[in-house]
Image (cartoon, rainbow, N blue to C red):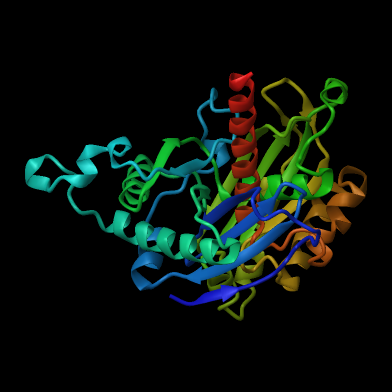
Length: 352
């Protein structure tokens, strides 16, 4: 595996003790990021997966927001792992041989385990401290089999997985951009009751796939999945391999279907305007793709229904806000920090 150390997104003076760690396990690679309490977000590493990892990830079924059951409204619960040194807190089946009732070896578990070990190592080297808590996100909402493999992988390296919920890389990119714009992603609670839901477009672009998701976001940052798609025939490698222009037309058509307006949210609001765009993925830098996205937004919705922020957002025009390569990992790191902060707050209240 090749490790690439990169990019400080926001520069401030930081206290090294208060941070959250986030991982993004994508199709061909994985990224690790750290976020500090003062808002500094840093892309720590990109780890290229081996052939077996890439094959495994591409062969999985990743669900998108449009496939959510009606009750699965919130897309903010991640795969949260907390390292526990006490073996008694781990599932005993992970420490027994198969003939004694333990879990049989699974290739997915081993591949995820190796990737997590690589990411944890880079995170610990960067922070110069033991990493105990992480949040992990995948290209789409994972199957029960992948969730089970992730549980087994984290347990086997001394990590405990207390909660699993629906999440995907695009939704975490939205949260990373929200954090960057608002500072910790927070808005005064009293102001929230005057807000109306607004549409947010998230697009993850890589060698392996083009993933798009349309969400209704409320003031508190909760995301209601409207619709989404994931197409491995439209990834950067496949889409532009044909000189006949079919790749470009396929990308345009997929984005047009995603942006079909108006939409009706679970709250009964009728929305027809894109408020913001969040880009993620290793090919999120690609200017050719960005120009197509702007073109589709303007042709399908018109300038009146696309906010200036969505068209000229710095995350699309430059790298001054959130680096697309690390956006999903940064969003995951922000969730990790918030959960650690909440845990600490509860502990302090209990000691009073």
